[in-house]
Image (tube, rainbow, N blue to C red; front, side, top):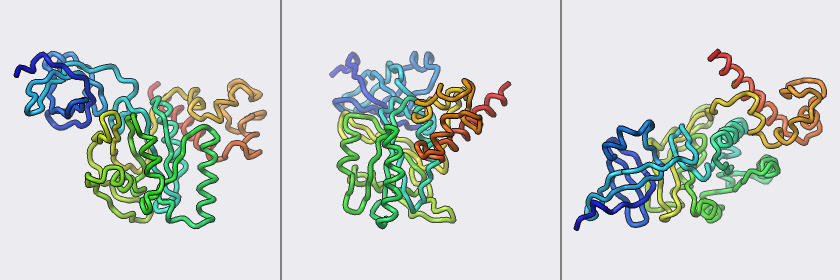
Length: 304
């Protein structure tokens, strides 16, 4: 049977050294890149890219990528294209909750135009006081319109809700090492073995267990990426005067300060500082905004 004229649209779900695995509505195909396309490509093909493939052999499931469609977004580290959302997994303890990492993650997701979800895992480890502490943090983020979810591997708490949240989307699970990301994925994909390590070390961090990027298929329209754990959240470079636009509760107040060029760092008549002092804006949020703002100023000056 001649399959040379059969073209299918699919999603790159895994990148290997010399080929790509492309998932289509029919099957997963092992694909190379068309020579002329390879010459035209200014950028590499990455996991998550939407492509057309020409079937070479339908029996051995082999094809050639003949077209790459424009990306709606791109996360450079880890490299993933066309994400619907990134789910950032955290714990109150083991490892200890790092709200600065959360805020840097939220800033990055906003800068890359990717929806962000905050998951709080290992809630089975918390007593009543600790659970109230976590709920207070979660409530703050919910009040500025971020989605939050509570999960726990023992008892499968929140797993059905997590799966529903991912339905018909391309999602990435990420988080600081040791937060239980691989354990959660093992419940969603029981037939796949994920390597997990216990949390250890002076800082309560786990060791990195995921080594490459792969989109796991829950169904033909639902993909989840298992991304490497990381020690801290790098943030993209943006103009410093746009940093506030990635902090919703600060962006909503921009223009209400006494001075038009207020950066919300001890200036007189600063509305943001007033709201921090009154408890309406969390002090850690202003602190993390200012750290990112000053970082962007340093980056700009470094290139002058």
